[in-house]
Amino acid sequence: MRKILIFLSALMLCCSMVLGHEENTTFENANSAYNAGQFEKAVMLYKEILESGQQSAELYFNLANSYYRLNQVAESIFYFEKAKLLKPNDEDININSAFAQNMAIDAVEVLPKSQMTQWKEKIFDLLSQEGWAYFTVLLAWLLALFWGLYLWNKVPLVKRTFFVSTVVLGLLLMGSLAITFVKASNAADTTFGILFNNKIEVWAEPNKRVEVLFLLHEGTIVQMLDELQEWQKIRIANGSEGWIKDGKVRSLKGFK
Image (cartoon, rainbow, N blue to C red):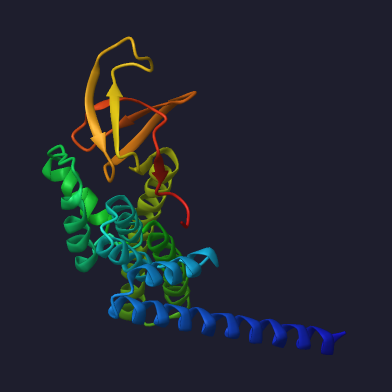
């Protein structure tokens, strides 16, 4: 029985190594196609990796650049936003994302934020939601280690140092836990998406007996607020809200 388990473990390891090698090869082939100006082929290969269940900021970034070269605005903005979710402070991603958004017809001004809100967002965006979760686990392990060293050590000065370190780690752990919880809660309660309609009217209410508030075009980032049959209530970055009918909005949640 033990030999069978060892054989199965070895087989699974070999399979994972083979699959990982194949994905790396596909990624390299996609990059080569992009560098050769074969952007449609690059898109096909990058999406092939996505279909296998893999995701990374680099993959989304390269896919977004490929769509940008093909002048597919909404697709480009969508994948840049996906990349930003994983690496919110990456300079290359943010710069190229800004170029893509400049291609969109709708120039939506973002509501001004207070200095406190800006500082809060900077701290929250230091890591992705997954990154904060890993950081929290790391702090928990370090806290346990330093607490154990504090209890074990007999030298007063060293013992005091470990005690102070344990207190600092405890405070950092509580802060990291709070940030992780808030980011997870916001991610669960808030849904952003990219509009893929070429042009769509935004109405004051979910019926066509009221006035049209404004028009939106493909590539606009919207927040989904509510849904009523074929109607969707949205909010854009400047705070304006309204209802769209049969809107083609692709959510930024999930892998693809």
